[in-house]
Image (cartoon, rainbow, N blue to C red; front, side, top):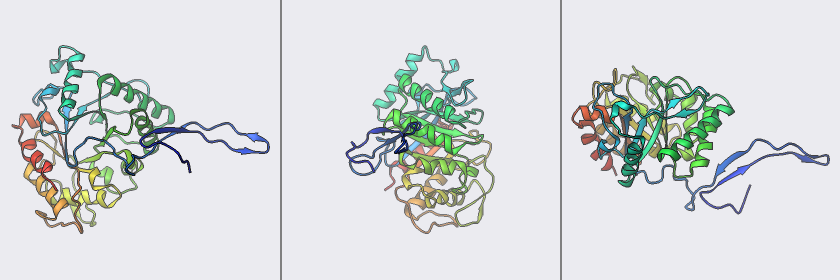
Length: 339
């Protein structure tokens, strides 16, 4: 027990053993951040109670090409997709795609600052379908934390999104994220976008990671698409593309240890945004109503309500624009109107 520490402050600890013969070598440092003065952490300070997350494409794949300034106003968290890996395991960098039409990197940085001036959070996403950043050792965890922090400093990103789809090591990624949080401070935004298979039980590496960093975690926006059928929290099998699929799978996270404020529903913005799993935006709203208020449920109705549920996510702001902004115009106001 350590007393006399300041709130919302990072401290470094080392451990050694002492006896009559002397003191052992000290351990590697471990960093911990104290909670805020009100006794609770505030991961992602400044994110609305009910928030909408959108991935912004740093590439042209046929969706509407946007500059960051063009991202629709309904999005509270904008995940810049994606960081790039380097030859050094765990290390990430960022390369602005010339296809987006920016005159300079500084213009892009100015767009980030302008969105932040509007109250939005802009974070860097790591992973995606093709991205593969490997964090499986203390050295790679350190490289991840150091390089992610450099990007936050260079571009002004508010935090990071973990969208690694090729397997993770929860032990070392926990180390990396805690180290990054210690460097960035308690206001860092930390989001995750696991696939459905990654969150079927608390024994999966992704779920363990989320619980390991619960005190610094802003929201988990699971991808309810490209999935196939999955088990709900009642042990029944549900097929993607229905309100029951959204609610019964969210229930696993809500009852598995995450706070409702750390759970969001991720769906494609259009039929072209994913290979499968698209639902009409009205279905997303119905699922949020079911979870938050116990209304508009399908055949699955949770045993209790979760009025604090964070909100929803979509891939992507670009596909949303290509579809006439139907996803954000429908889901955005509904999320922001939740109790």
